[in-house]
Length: 296
Image 1 (cartoon, rainbow, N blue to C red):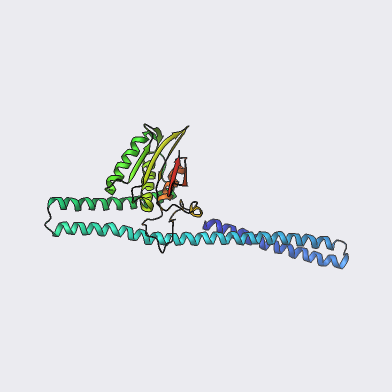
Image 2: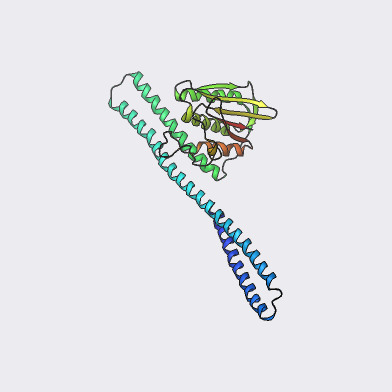
């Protein structure tokens, strides 16, 4: 964006200089013409006024375009700063928790059941940390075009059932309901699909799944594979729907937001779907919440 803005600015600047030089040339000619003959003066004046109006319109458009680009750059910079603050906190939290669990095990004479419980919590925090780091790495790979799909024949229904089981185990409670068409097979990149579903499920859990109202669905429609995740959270305002798939974007007010997150999950989802030559959309759920639907 910065490069495009710079190029546009230089082109606009060059046009302004050339236009003033052109006007200067015409004014000199017009002065000479007044000395000799005034019959064509009115035509030349109309031509100069017309060119002036065109120049003024282009100049106003250019200034508006530059202002919009600067505004986008400032918004991106603010999101990057928020991302750094958020991800720093989220990386420190599991590290601090793991340190506490290990110190408790080391310093206290615990029975086997309590030791096992603390070890399981430490493993969960470690998996959470791995997930955050993987998202950061995936975002970087996507921006550098380093991820290419490797499609293979896959039983999508079975894959989604496995992902749901892992999700329940990770959160230690039944939060997810399944609406999956049986034995749906397709040629897909398994890593892409797992990453997409995991990010959608984590997003649904953050914004509205604490009551167990998350649904993972899958069905075929003609030659297309349609799947997605529904939640019954607060939903997404219509004016924000176009922005939710942008990098670092997080819904809501930054000063009052309580949900954790880096603003990378839905960006990764959108990019992986695009590389897989599919479409992703955000719809309203019934009776409330959001529905992220993907078509491949």
